[in-house]
Length: 369
Image 1: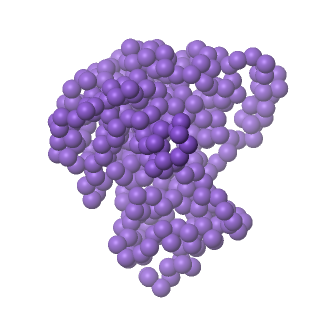
Image 2: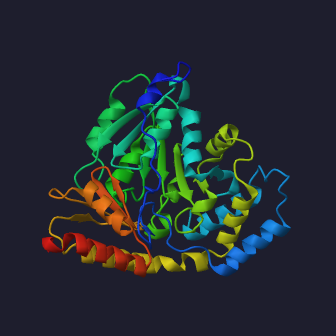
Image 3: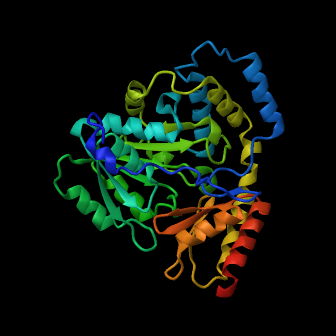
C-alpha cells in the first residue's frame, strides 16, 4: 500500500454495482431494486425542455434546496396523513442519494473516534462500507433466522462498554436484502433507546410498503428517517435522497454536507416527479402483484426458502444449492440478480422481464421440481 494511504483501507471491500460482463440480449437488470419503468415520454420531454430553457449551465444549483424541501414536506405529510404534528421544510435535508446522507450522519456523530455504529446483518452493505471509509468502528450482530432483530444481542452490544461507544444504529424498514418490516416489538425497543443513540430508519422502499415511522420523528429528536427518489419515483440516475428529522438535526446535516451537492437537473427532476407522483406511483400495484406471482412460481422448487417481502424485491436462500453459481448461470442467460449475504435478491421487473426470469429458472432447475 502507498505510504500516505490509511492502512485499514487495504482490506476494505467496496460496494459492487451492476455485475457487468458479457450477457445475451435482452438483459433484465433485476439486481439493484430500481423501478423497471423509465419516466413517461411526456415527462422526459418536459425535463428536456427545462434543461434547454431554464437551467443555466454556468451557474451553481440552488444550494438551499428550498423549493424541493417544501415539495417533499408536502408529500411526506400527504402520504403519512394524519400526522399529529406535520413535517416542515426545516425538517428535510437533501443528499446526493441517501449514501451522502449516511455519510453526513456519520461525520456528525462518529468521526474522530467520537462513536461507532451498530448494524444487523444481513442488511444494506453501505452502512458498514461508508463507516469504514471514515475510520468509524462497526459492531455487527446477526439477525434471527426469520431476519427479525436479535434484540438481546442488540441490547447487549449497546450495554457493553466500548471505546468508542456506539452512537448510531442503522435499520432498513423494510430491510434490504430480506424485505421484512420492523415488528411492533422492535419499534417499541427502538423507542426505549436513550437519546444519545441516533436511530436511523431507512425507508427507501416506503412507497412499496406504505408503512412508515415518520410519525415518530417529532416524538424522538434522536431519530432520522431516510428516503430516496431512486426506487418508486424512477429517478435512480438523478441521485436524490432526503432525510426527515428534527430541525436541530437537519441543521447539523446542512452544516456538514458539501455545498451545491444536488445538481439543478436532479432538483428539477425530483420536483417534476413529485408534481406527477400519482402517475409515477401508479405502477406500484402491478409490482406488488408481480412480486406475489414470482414468489408463487418459485415456491415450486423444493430447495428454495423464500421470505415474505414488503419491498420491490424478493429474497431467497437454499441449504442445498450453490446460489452464487446459480446467479452466475442466470446472468449468462441475461437475468441479472444480486447474490448477497448467503442468498439471492431478485428485483421485481416488468411482467415480460419476470416471465423471462421464471423461464430461466425453469431451464436451470427443471430437475428439482
